[in-house]
Amino acid sequence: MSETITLNPGELETLVRRALVASNTSENTAGSVARALVTAECAGQKGHGISRVASYSAQARSGKVDGHATPTLTAVKTATVHIDANHGFAYPAIDLAIETLPALTREHGLSAVGINHSHHSGQAGYHVERLAQQGVIAMMFGNSPQAIAPWGSTTPVYGTNPLAFAAPRKDASPLVVDLSLTKVARGKIMVAAKNDEAIPQGWALGPDGEPTTDPHLALKGTMLPIGDAKGAALAMVFEILAVALTGANFGYEASSFFEAEGDRPGVGQILIAFATDGIRDEGVFADRLEALLGLVASQEGVRLPGTRSQALKQVALKDGVTVSRAILADVQKIASSL
Image (cartoon, rainbow, N blue to C red):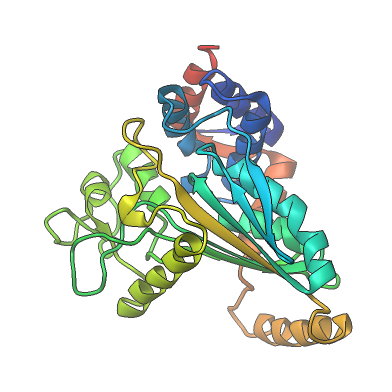
C-alpha cells in the first residue's frame, strides 16, 4: 500500500474540523484552525499542516488550549490594537487581526496588532498573504517555546520565532516571504519523529549539545539558527517584538506546543501593516516593486520567494493534496470519537 493518499482539500478540511470539534473545540474555532492547517498542507508546509491535529486535539482535550475561547480586541492608540487570544488557538485571534488591520492601515498609513495569551500560529505566510490580498504590505513576528540557545550556549532561551512578509502586486499574486530563524522549521522535525525518519546533519543539537540526526533527540535539544550568531540575535529581536510589546510569555517561559501536559503556552504575535500609499503615491510603490522583482526573476535559476508554495496550492486545488496515510489515520481516529 502507498504511504500517501490524495484527497480533495475541502474533504480534508471537513475531516480536520470534525477532529477538533470531537476534541472539545467550538465549530467556529475548529473551522478557523482547519482552514489554516489544510492551507499549509496544500502549500507543502506539512510541519504546519495536518500533522498538528493530534497534538492540537490532545491539548484541547486536556484544557492546555481553550477550544472555546473567543479573542477580545481593545483599541490602544490611534493605529494600534491589542488582541487577547484568551489562551485559545491563535488562528481566531489572527483572523480578527486580519479583519481589523486593512481599514486601520488605509486610514493611518501604518498600523499594528499585538496578540498575547496565544498559541502556535502555524504557517505565518498564510496570514500576511491574506492582508496583501486586501492591498496592504504586511509583516508578522511571533515567538514559540524555547528551542534556540544564545550563540555560544547550549541552553535554549528563544523560540524558532517565525517571520513573514507579504506585499501586494499589480497583476500577480502577492509576494510572500515566510521563514523561521532556525535552519529548518521545528515542525519538519516533528513530522520526521512521527514517521521515524532521520533528519539531516546540521539541523539540530541533541540534549547533550552534540549534532544529531535523530529527530526525537532533536526535539529534546536545541535548533540551530540561520546565520549562526546573527540568527540568534534576530531571535532575540523577535522575542522583544512579539513578547515585550504584547505582554506574552517569552520562549523560555512557554510550555510545549506538542504536549498535552503543562501550563498554557501564552506566546505572542505582532502583525504590522503599511499602506502602499502611506509614504509616496501608490503607483510609486507598485512600479518600484515590479522593477526589483522583475530583475530578480529574470536571473537564470532564480525564483521569487513563495512561488513554489503558490504553485503547490494551485495543484492541490486542481488535483488534490497528497498526505501521509499514517497521519491521516490519526486524524480519522480522532474525528470518529465525536
